[in-house]
Image (spheres, one colour):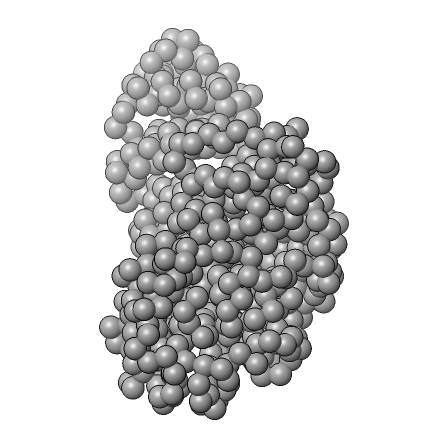
Length: 580
């Protein structure tokens, strides 16, 4: 017969503590856990649950010790590893967090939460394919797992699988209606899939449920931008900035919209928000030595590259102006651009980035801040071209190689940008889109395409004869020397068109419906490059229309000379079209 006055067994004490814990009676639960551990210091379950309580109370140091000790006692317990991962997450120990989740998923292959947590950690590292695999495992084990479905949709969007991202996003909302985060993520996938009206409606729904949801407000502003309603985008993004003035993404998005609409003073100021983004490209951060527009005479000024090749080429126009102010200009840039940048007037030294060379300088400035430092407006853009001098031996090499038919215009083609660019899916097109050029026999077409998209040259559109000399292009100075021998470049929005413009070569630029800020709206020319002409999609995804316009213009060519007059003037509109 049990003695009612006898002290409870260890098992009973633990079960009682668990019951108090689950019921939210945390003080009673903690007292029982500690009493149990006073008698059995190595009781792994009690250590673990006391650690969970500490984590819930945000006492992460205590949680780490307690759950860490539980793991030492029972290294094969997957639940312990999973919660230890949560502790490391709270502490910002990302590598240890991932290791814990990996161990937990291996020990508990039938636990959906273990795969979900691992998926979250992998996605935060940009390992979206692996994250998707873990989310799928979690959903297979628990089909009604809205968090896993929501995150799966987000990861699928990151790798461009938009149709499935939309489908699983809709499923997450079916399981948990009126969930602002899931609505926001679904709307983002719809936005990227050019289903802009529905995306905007869903953003509005999310904001109706959570009026202070600044992320969704900023995302809706971007959707307005992409739909061509740039003025509305500006108004929405200003609201987002007012709602959270210290949040860089909203101000960064606003910068693009302002610059697109020629609000340059506010736009360049807002562009500085890039410094606070999770992924930013600045190497030097010391505000004490950053040049903000003061005296430069006899100062050694380090200008450092950021963002992509095209941005570097575009902003190199400011380097001679710095030298004119008396600075000794030292440029640190991408190694692929270093030989080309040595041809920019006023540059005293070029240092390839990432090669262990520590530059000496008095002041520094990131190159994308130069328009702000010079107070640039559209009317004052330094647009004198060319502003890059080339290696004449390389130019002559290509002249001789291309001299077989001097009477036929030589036209370079590029159809895709860097796949790492966030909006590459919008701005790039397949080589097959150039099919209308196949009937134009009075010109010779050359490929300027590098990277994975260059493989498409193995199956060009029927009748399009495309000469490929890109195997000889080792860096951008080689590409520049080749372009110098062309009569025209036709390309999507990539560094190739910036290079052509900087060299004062005619270039026809094929732009997506919602183009980048630097191409502005409603104009067929560029204030940055006098020799560029812009051809815009009339609606998202429609490459057929601008390519047909290009083909029509090319069909009237008789020799190279007929190209040049079209590019010697600034053209506001014309065949370039605009956003409706």
